[in-house]
Length: 401
Length: 228
Image (cartoon, rainbow over all chains, first blue to last red; front, side, top):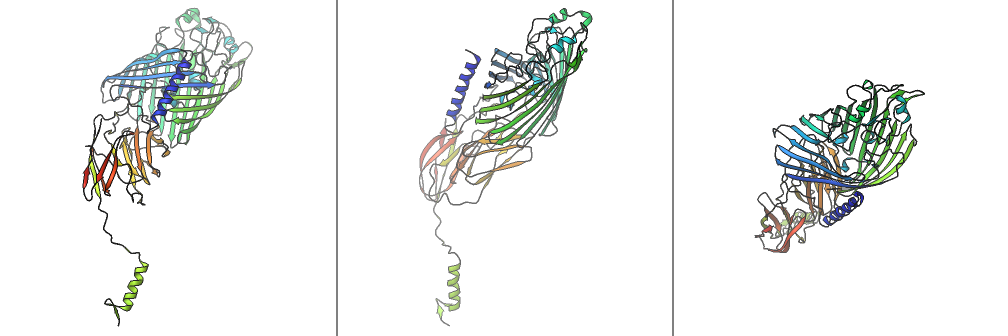
C-alpha cells in the first residue's frame, strides 16, 4: 500500500472518529497518565507540479506534493530515564525511524538532560517544530530544504564546475566522486543525526551541545568519514513573548570515498561545514512573528584552475508571520532569501549557486480542533538554472492526535 | 376634622396617593423550596491527557499540574417555572496554572462573564471552537487576564492552542439549578421549588445517569450517583 493511500485511509478514519466524538461535546483523546505517551499526525498535501525543483527535499519529493504519517512516542520507566522515538512514513521514503534516543535526567529536580541516540538537532529554531501544525504554511524554509549543488560524495574540480551548475541542486553532476544525485541543503530539517547531547538550562536561559557523526546538511545514522560534528545552541527567553537563540556547528561533510577521489594536496584533512544561526521569535495576542538567519560555509577542494575559493558560503534569511483572524482561522506568510558567495571562473564571476527568493502566503482553518486545512500560494525566483521563476499553489489536510 | 380610619383626611389622601405612586410590595409568603443533595462517586476518574511527546525538545518538559478530574455536575434537566427570570450578571474564573485549567469543569448560568487569568510563566492561548461559543483570546502573559461573556446555554470545550493537553469544560445553564461536586464528590442544589424533576449527573463530556427525584417543601432530598 502506498504512503498516499495509507495516509488517506488514516485521515478518513481520524476525521470520522473526530466527527463521531463531536456528537456529544468532543472529548480530547486521552492517554493513560502513565509512563507512555503518543502523538502524531497525518498530512496529505496536493500541490502544483514543481518543474523547477524549488520545493524538493533530499528525499526526492516536493514538500508541496506528498503524504506523510508520523508517530512520536515516549516511554518513561523512571523519572530519570525516558526512551523517545519518532517513526515516519512519507512519499518517496517508506517507513523510517526518524529519531530514537534515550533521555537521561541524572537529577530529576535539575534541568540537566543527556540525550543519546538518533537525537533531535540542536541547531536553529525550525528543527524544533515537531508536528505539522507547528508550521503555519506548507513549504519548508529554504535553509532547511532547498538543495544546493554541493554534495557529500562528489565535489567540483574547479570554480567553473560550480558556476556551470548554478540552480541545479536537485541533480548535481559534480565531476569528482560519485554519479549525479541531489545536493545538500544548508540544514537538513528532515533527518536527524546520531550522537550525544547535553542540555542545561533554566526557564529563562538554556543551552545545548551535541556531538554527532554526520553534519548539519547530512545527518547520518553511521559515520562515513571518521569526522565528528559539534553543534550548540543557546536560547534566551527574557519574557514569555520573546525567544532569542543563537546556534553554531562544525563538522566534516565529505564522505571517505570523496576524500579518496580528491588529490590530497587539494584539500585539508577534512572538508568541513561550518554554520552559525540566529533566530528571534516574538508573539503577542493573535500575532506570532519568527525570524531566522543561517550562515553556512563549506570547504571545497582546489583541484584545477580556476580554483574556487577555499570556502563557499550561503546565507539564508527568513521572516514569518502568523495572525489569528477569528477562532479557528489564521493567515500566515513567509518571506525568504537564500544567497551565495561569489566565485570567479574562466569567463565570468557569479554566485556559486543561484540566489533564490521565495514568498509564501496562505492560511489555515480548523475544520475541527484536530483537523486543519491549509492552503498556500508560493512564488519563487531564482537568478540561474533553467526555470527561473515558479508560481505554486498547494492545499494540505492535516489531522493530529 | 373628619377621620378616615383614624387618620386626618389630608394624611389619608396623601397615603392613598403614595400607594398609587410607589409600587405595591406584596408581602406574599416566600415559596417553600427544598433542596437536592447527595454524592457522585466517580469509580474510575478519567485520566488527564498526557502531553504529546515533543521528541524534538532538547530536554524534558517542566512539571505540570494534573487537573482534578473527579468533579461531576448535577443539574435539573427541566427547570421549574420562574427559573428564567432576569438575574444579576455573574462572574466566574477559570485559571491557567501549571499547564492546566483550574477548575477542569466550570458550571455557570447564562450571562456569566468568565475570567481567564494566566498564572503561568509561559504564554497560553485559550480558545474554543464549540458551537455554543467560539472565541480565541490570543496569547497573553502571566498576571494578565481576559474575559468572555457566555450568553447561550450549552457545553463549551476550552483548550489552549499552545499546550494541546490543556482542556476544560464550561457548562452554561439557562437556569440556576445545578451544582458541581466538591473534592469529596458532594453536591447540593438549593431553592428548588417542590415537585418532581429529572436530575442529571454529567461527567467528562457526557450524561452518565438521569434520575427522577421528588423535592418536598422545606426539606432536602438525597440523590446519590455512581459513575462506573
